[in-house]
Amino acid sequence: GARSFAQGSSVVPGQPVVAIVGSPNVGKSTLFNRITGRRDAVVDSTPGITRDRRQAGAEWSGRTFQLLDTGGMDPADDDEIGTQVYSLARGALAEADLVLLVVDVTVAPTGGDMEIIDSLRGTEIPVMIVANKCDSPARDAGAYNLLSLGLGDVFPVSAQHGRGTGDLLDAVIAALPPSSDDPEVDDGPEATAVSIIGRPNVGKSSLLNALLGEERVVVHGEPGTTRDAIDTTISIDGTPLVLIDTAGLRRRGKARNDVERYSMLRTVDAAERSAVAIVVCDAVEGVTDGDLAVCEQAAIARCCTLLVINKWDLAQPDLDDLRGLVSRKTRQRPPIEICSTVTGEGLHRIIPAALRLAERARTRVPTSRLNDLLRELARERPGPRKGNTRLSLRFLTQIAESPPILRLDVNDRGLMTRDYGFWIENRIRREFDLEGVPVIIQVRGRS
Ligand code: GDP
Image (tube, rainbow, N blue to C red; front, side):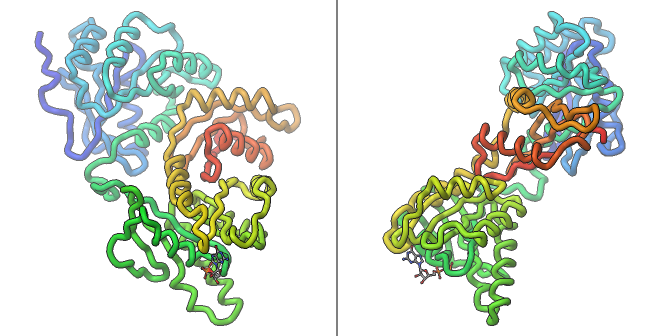
């Protein structure tokens, strides 16, 4: 009969909707209960079995969403797949912002699965594949075969035991559109915060003024004075940007120690408020230990870094040498630009290069590509060993962006060494074009 699926919208104002779909007995209800019932996913309404569906509010890491279990749509109807395909085809899931397709890894995909998959392909809604019944890591390999469906990222999960559901939820909230009741949401395109930092006298103020003087740059309003820094909102070719300057602090210190102390404080403060730090160096001096320390400060503040060699009119150090130095001595390996605030050379490239880094930091790398790389890395350089056990790399997934945060599952994180961790980080950076971008890797696995 006519489904009352559309009756009573699942849309709670301001809350995104996540729909669970899948064949019978794959574990949809268990997953629903797991997500809405667990202590750290706060349930804000009692899930009620209605004739049509179950729905409940859930919360994870401070984000709320509505979870919809299409499985219980019509308990009297034994042709559940028919029901699902029917409702998908009808666009009943049009209100969903994200679909969790649950598949049982212990059985081969059924015709019913394929029908559901085909109907999902026809929609614009992003899909995550929940490979359920991965009760132990041994089953994860089977899960990744599901990547070949090309439908979305795969999450090995045991809905029954809770294994992997945290990762799944991290990915769910990262993929959701912002709630309209989210305080951070604003209407216009977000301005990228860029700071100009570096040792004294490398030319930071000159660079700021030169950038503001560029023809393509429109300066909005009077520069507002904050406590320590002067922020200027500008747009360049229509892209909004906040330039964070730290010149205001300069006058505070008189003694040399004070100057140095404030200079470090400025750096940290500015980097913490920025998406990208332009680290200015002096071409005459090359890249000094002091410059590298500034880069490191910015990296610790989880800020993208761009190295700018200023005063190019006075000296032209070998860029290949500098690149070599920077990739040996910095963790983040910032890209390098050159400029002269006197001749204007190179100036036009600086802001686009900074914006490009912010853009790269927003990257989401598909889980399939991360795990392809992980397998390659494990082949190339097997993990360190302690006694009879060797570190094995199991699964890599991105759980956040701006900056990218990755979660690496291993057999035993006690086996991870600093050296091996940095090697992995740098290979990821190289593979996904993340030079100059912070990459945070959280290693997980019983220790
Ligand atoms: P800050 O302390 O890093 O803000 O440095 P300033 O912007 O005050 O510049 C320090 C000195 O370097 C000043 O005397 C500037 O005129 C000079 N300077 C800045 N940029 C350049 C450049 O590209 N070429 C040359 N030759 N001098 C520069």
